[in-house]
Length: 313
Ligand code: NCD
Image (cartoon, rainbow, N blue to C red; front, side, top):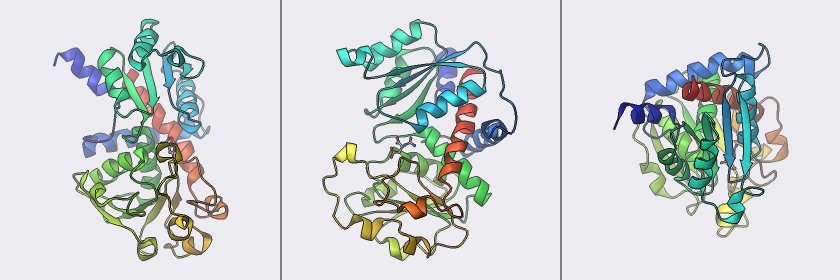
């Protein structure tokens, strides 16, 4: 690998898998420094003035796309937005050709979301500018993982000795995968909870520690012992709801009665968008004392500011 290629690798963020504990903690500390700007307690910065970031979103998004745009704006950079509909992707142009075309216009970084696992890595090997994965199929969603880690760090301070339940459609979730890598690298214990077809035992083997992963199919047996709970959206677009039992909500939904059994200081998380009344009941999602879904969103801006700075500064 040449020095230039090595440098480009460092400036990409394709996943949390393989990131060392120290790199993760550094990124979280950097994101922490942008929180005041993200919360609008401090004025915006102009550190990236004159830079242009391309948001290539080949799959739908509300939070991630707008959050990258807001993060870029808070750093003084500009964004160009491209989605599949309304672009030449709908005429059959490949993702790589699209990315190369946008790069040729002189953009400084590419943020990419795709249904296809591995698309950001393919694009990264085809362009010279930094590439940031904004979610690729079932594979990874590293900035979501980082914003979840940052949010948890505010509640927990340290990750070791802490246990989190990630509940729901684990098999189809890139959010679960990125969180698994990040949380276990930082020493937390993760219990993956869901029906056997959505939370297969094999998911326990994908990370390396020092934290641990277990799989459990009985939410009621773990709910009282965890230090946080992360509910996941059922990914209807990835399996069209096939195999989702009619009694899913009864066994795996976070109802008010179930939420009342959590430890009093265990926060309730969800990456959004929420299927209200399926994986989480509206009064639980909106509970101002327990739900930290809105904090997750705000922290997303701080995390993306840190990630953009790391790629571009
Ligand atoms: C997630 C995603 O797209 O993977 N959303 C997000 O970015 N906050 C989760 C989901 O869609 O369920």
